[in-house]
Image 1 (cartoon, rainbow, N blue to C red):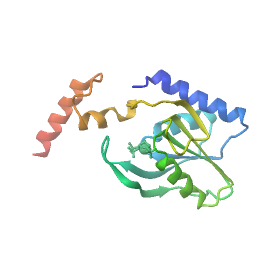
Image 2: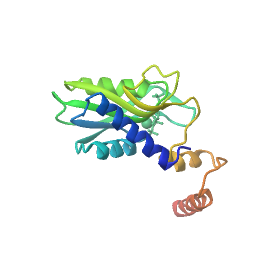
Image 3: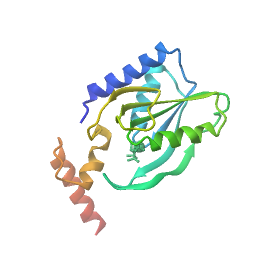
Length: 174
Ligand code: PRP
Ligand code: MG
C-alpha cells in the first residue's frame, strides 16, 4: 500500500512535470471515486480551484468488472475553450481514463490532458503525466475499507477496529 508520503511524492512529481511542460490547466476533472483525493491534492498544489467530477465505475469487485466503464453522471460545466486535466488514481487497462477523456472532449475544451499517480505497464492509455509505472496490485489508502469489506483476510492496519464497525452495522440493519 503506498504510504501517505508516497502519495505526496506522486502529487508533487506530477505538478512538477506539468510545470516543466508549461501546462497549467484551467480546470481539473476527477474520476469518481479513486481520483478524488489525488485531484484535490493536485488542485491544491497548483492552486486550481475549478475542480469537477465524472462518475465512472468499471470494477464491481477486485477482479470482476463490467464489459466497459459505466458512466453514471457527469458533473462538469463551462468546459468550452478550457484547458482540462482529467485525474485518476491509476490507469490499469486504460479504459476508464480513455472513456473519461472522450467524455470531456465532447464538451469542446481547448485541450484535454490526463494524469494518474500510477500506471500499469500494459495500460493502453498512458496518461500524459504520471508518477510511477507499477505492475503490482495497489491498495490505495482511500480504498482500504472497501477492500477489507470484500476480503477480510487482507492484512492492513486498524483492521480489527473496522471489523467491529462492520459488526455493529449488521446488528443495526437487523
Ligand atoms: C479503478 C481505478 C480507476 C480504474 C482503472 O476504479 O480507480 O478509475 O479502476 O482501471 P482501468 O484502467 O482498467 O479502467 P473503479 O472502477 O474500481 O472505481 P473506484 O474509483 O470508485 O474505486
Ligand atoms: Mg476509479
